[in-house]
Image (cartoon, rainbow, N blue to C red; front, side):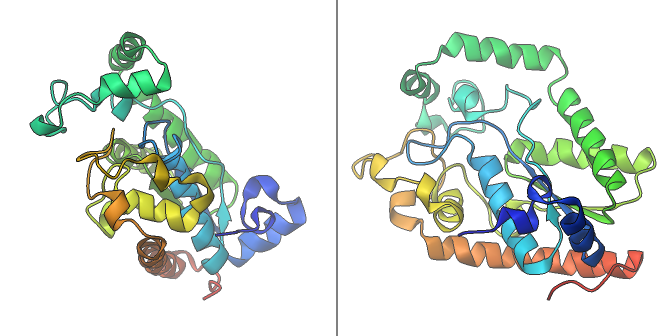
Length: 266
């Protein structure tokens, strides 16, 4: 999928171009992700990449402007590189066992160092700082003239703190409409398995290498969900993005009625 960032991304547009596009459709899209293991076959920035690519596709189809992705200040105690071990969290089924040790070995990283960083995050309030960053980002984005802000947190543990950040934004006087797009609006979701890999195969196929997975493994390292070797496809990714498009289009129409926004491209 090729999107011309000069037509859709705030960072790539000149002032006159930005003004025209924003006045036509004052919607700002905020991609949100983290840095985390997503299998041998996917890039480490998958959460942010899928978010940016989905929102870029939507912006290209419906109008609006994609803001810079947000990757930092998250809770590092809530990433696969630390918690993909059934002895560490109930989120990982008992039969899965320990994937953290081999993930760290594959990355040539110290497990104890990652765990120390996770503890530091907990001591510092877990998602507290990240929520403050998102609140600040919402206010800054609103000041740039957007009537509707569409946030897409690609990392599932971000769903609750991003909702809290939006509540804080509103309680402190934020007036822009805000919509949170999540994978769970269209599917159960997974971690680096068939669903996320399908999105990547459609949106960023050059970053995926399914041959990096062993067809004889009963469970791929750090992957949770349907086997991407058997179930992932670009077509599944395409149909998922089409569902996202419909959902956001409805939100734009609702916001347009409330804010008297211009008509969108579709």
